[in-house]
Length: 621
Image 1 (tube, helix red, strand yellow):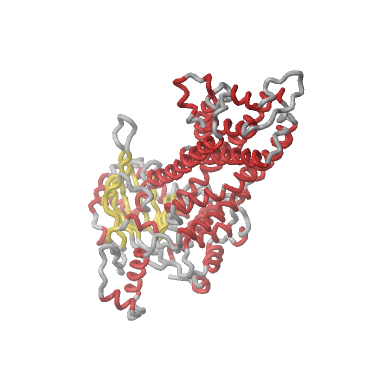
Image 2: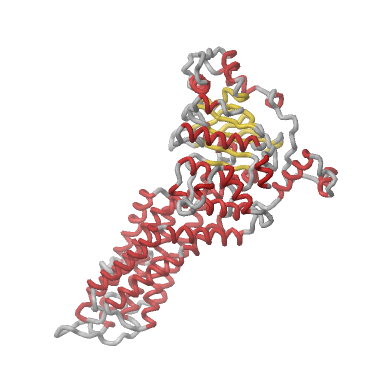
């Protein structure tokens, strides 16, 4: 069903009409060590129909969100039971392509505008033959976001963010939509507006399922169907209008002029005194295929691997069934499930994600401007403090401390901000990937390349300022070698920050970063000569990335046959740079072996990041 406005926009509201049915659905999560597994869902059965707005109601901990996670395919581990679409078993791996799930904490990239968020979603989720501008403009009107067109996400109100979260998933016109508490954090007026938007979506033929928490009487009456959860079990599934009658028939008295939603919650929480087992048994044993509100037109949905070409398919392909809506619907379903998992190629995904990531990076004042300014300011401070000591044989120890500070500053100034910024982006990636926007490899390589400009620009500005101000040798080869070490240290630092941010939250990630890196300083060769380290600790020096960075940077300055230094005092022991290298235990060290060590660290961390993101994807299911 499409409204006049929809027809005028040229956008079909719902290409498929799908009914979702589930029988004996159970979900078990493993317990802690020594504890028994916890059963979150217990033999839940129910049904949601296309063209109707359904509410899932229950007390906190009743299993509402878990039910949506299972039905949407976001949770597959520990799940048993039967889920069907139009009477046929649901293909688990493909179901997400014709559905979307808007979670309660729907994270988005703060530095994109409303129009950019929708435009990029359209470019990622629509094929090349679609008019993306038409779709974006239609969603802007439908979600009433025209006035916020050029507003960044971080500056939107709560209601606008909720509507935008629906809009970005509405780009592909999914026939099944799941919402986890879409009214949370909104006032009563905004909540009514939000549910009105969802009801209009359901009116277009979609199957819309919402978890709601203690709705008002006005809000409750806007829903068509209801599923009530209690302790992981279903105690009612059907029309909103039939709920009170059913509960009263089971012995639960409904007070006059009472909010029906509050009444249902009190029954579910067993505050009405009577047992709910009769309700549970009634709905567990009920044959949903004979429900009064069953849709008359049930379209078949087959697994494409088992489907064979029949006469009807031949008729559709030849254009002989253009006036048969049921046949057209079946053909659309088959085409949807048999097509590629993504509407655009992985190379195209990579290009779009790279553009998006770079746009967000350079708009982030924390990661871009402040980071750049910090490198310049600290470079000037370091150059002023150690001004002109690089060629003075009497100040070699001070110069080496200056070089070690180069390493420390570049590492922590690039690792710590990344730990703080990446968890939000990681949650956006998980949501978009699970909603079938793009693949992991496209995101990973886009993220890898988008970070390179800052990884080159910031250390280059810092080094070029501090290097010349501190009087290091004016030799082009040494400068290039010095820059190479600093850029590698910057890349390693940022990658390690990404890994820490992908594994855990900000607080724990910051602690892990310090716990992993600080011990490495002990084996860098700065605090103790490498020759003085006890033999049983020597293997640890080869695991320290700071050993490779510090050794390479010292060799850049004092190695490669550098001539005698200027002595500002009567006698300078380190006038010959080779004596200093010998005293530091670096006389036989190889600069390029140190570079290989840093590159190895970088490759290992990049692989760790990829594996970590992959593991998070599997765990999120």
